[in-house]
Length: 125
Image (cartoon, rainbow, N blue to C red):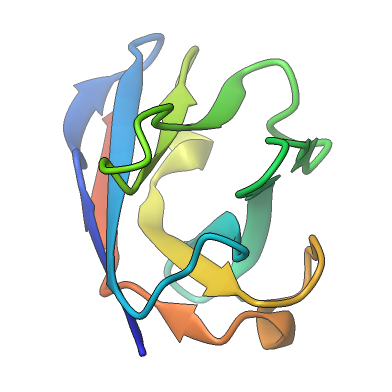
């Protein structure tokens, strides 16, 4: 089992930046691919970004490419993945989720085995 806990959400103004964190613990996950998703009210869960734990290869949804950056702590003892978000707009308002998969990088919700509880991001215009 892998436990994921997101933090860093909150209420911001349009144009602001925010950094989300996802702390992973439990069974070793050094070979896990990590992803960030979000879900707005009444909408399906949306892929944002993914990063391979080894090598750090990243992939982004077109909707956030250039504004969001996924990264991981370089310290192997600090098992945290981040999502740096910039130029936020009201369209970015959603609950943001961290996820992990033992498989390859994927934009599909069903590819991920473990999920955090989510953190709310609200952007006011």
